Every structure is written in structure tokens, then in C-alpha cells.
Amino acid sequence: MKPILRNLYLLAILMIFCSITSVFGQQNVILDSVIRVLADKSIYRNRVNWNDLKKTASETLDRTVSDPAEQALPAIRRLYTELGDHHGTFMTKTKSVRSYRNDGHSTSDSILYRYAFDEKYAFRTAVIDNKYGYFVLPSAQLTREEYTDSLIAITRISQMAQQLQDSLCSLNKYDLKGLIVDLRLCMGGTLWVDLGALIPLLGNGNLFSITGNSSKDDQIRLVNGAIYTNNTKQVNTLNSCSFKDKKIVVITGPITGSAGEMTAVALRKIDGVKFIGEPTAGYLTVTGLHQLSDEISFSYSIGYVKDINNRVYRKTFVPDIHISGGDNFPSLKDDEKIKAAIKWMDTQ
Image (cartoon, rainbow, N blue to C red; front, side, top):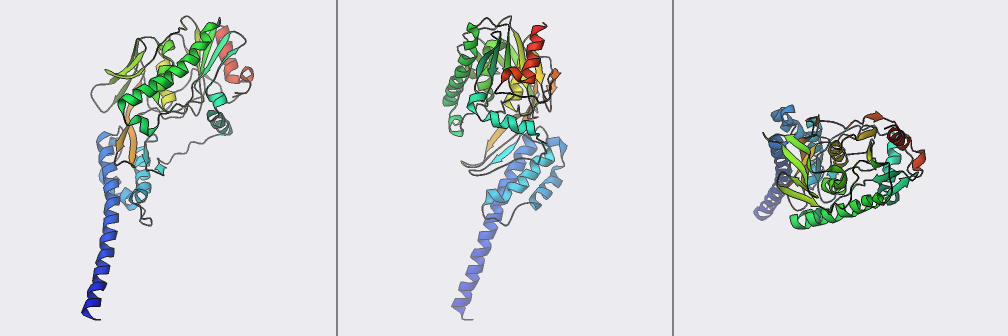
């Protein structure tokens, strides 16, 4: 082979090698970054041997695809699964991955999902038998763009919370015996929208706390229409109505998740409140968000929720009265959980 051709051939091999090395280097950078954050901040970090987990996760990198982030997806899913973090999510511009989890969704769960994405049922107030107010809390979510600026975020959160709160307050003109707050279709989203909507029910003071890796718990508290995390304001509303002295029933179900579950914990604050329905989805941890780039981020569990009675919720929220299935959103009077709620209010 002529020297010039040989040199070109060797250069081509070197370029290919460098390209492969660069790609696999990027894979490891992404994976190593996720591991570094989880090993330092995850509430589950002491569950695993990190030296072993780094090795097994690295072995599951998908070297058959060219995009570095996609190559890391199976490895990161392995991380979440080994940690037992079912709430964390790794997100690229086009894909996301979570832990392996067998939720065992039933037919009734599928029906609930259908209604949760139907605004006719998921954003709704009603009066049943001219005596019982009915309010559904939907899954309210800010966009990623709205979260990028804290001032824009709190403004948008407060607007969304006020819209829901106005809907709740519209029931106040009726002579109600009680109020049913339905969390069955609240799969999660922005917690502060949910809590802001329900400020007229909650009253001033601590709502719950977040306990995790730090020595001091974070306090979630309500002060005159505004909710704070410690001293940071999260949402502000007019708080223009009251349901004082009304009987309150909260309904939960198997797709009540994340922010919906935390809202249920906050509602424990109400004197005499009764919870009816089914155990929730099991996403009760508070998550943190880490941004790797403009297009890549991941969330992970950083704390547990603790109610005002110092009970820590590590898995699901379990209602006081268990009613399985029987959900009937088109005909509320025939809904088994609502019938149980009315029966309870009538006997108080």
C-alpha cells in the first residue's frame, strides 16, 4: 500500500475510533451525572451498594443507538428500579423513563383514566340532592417554560388556583349540608395549584411538612390566602368564601397520585373530615429536579410527607372507609363512593 493511502486509511480508522470513544464517553458522562446526584440526594440512597450499582448500571448501557441520552435510558431505569424510586423520571426532549413497576391496574382504573382526561368530568362542580356540594380537583400542570421563571410560575400557579377556587366557591351560595371533594381524577401535577384551590377549606397554619435527608423539616403552611414552603411563597389567592361548619368528605382512588396524594394529606388538617374510597397510587414522595442540559433533566425523590399529627406517609394514602370500585361519574347519585359519603354525612 502506498504511504499516502496507508496514512489516509490509518487516519480514517483513528477518526472512527475517536468518534466511538466520544459517543461512549458521553454515555458515561450522563449516567455518571445521574449517579452522582442520586447517591448524594436521593432519600433511598442508603438502600444500595453504589459500587455494585454503578457497575451493573453501566453494563446495561444501550450501545446499539447513537444518541448518548437514549443510550443511557436502560441504565438509568435500572438505577431507579434498584433504588425503589417509583416517582423519579429521566426526561429527554422526546423520551422519558422511570423504574420498572407492576401497578396491576384494574378495569376500574382504566375507567378512571378515561374520565381524568375528559374535562367534562375532571373539572366539575355540582350539587347533589340540593344538599351536598361536589367538587372535583383535576390534574393541573404548569408547562416547563412556565417553570423557568419563578415570577411567571407563581403568577400562573395563582391564576390556575384562583380559577379552581372560584369554582369551589360557587357552591357557597347553596344551603349545603356538606361538601364532597373528589380526588379520584387528580393524578398529580402542580401541588400548589391543588392546595391553592382548596385554601377556603384548609384554614391558617401548618398543612404538612417534608422530611428527608436534612436535619430540619420543611414546613408547608397557609397564611391569609397564601401558601409558603418555609418562607417562600408558592401560591396566593383571594380566599373569598368559607365552608366553616360544613361536613367534609374526601374521596380517593387508585389513580390519585403525587400532588393529589399530598393534597389528601393536607386535608387531614380539617376537623372531622372523613376519607372514603380506595388507597392511592403510591407516589407520595416529594421530588427534586436536576437539569443536565436544555433538553435533558431528571427528577428523584428527596423527601417524605408528614401530616400535622407527625404521621409519615412512605407509600400510599389509605382512606378511613374503603369502598372498592363502583365509580359512576356520569350519574353521581349512583356512584358507590358518593352514596357512602352522603350516608356518612346524614348520620353525623
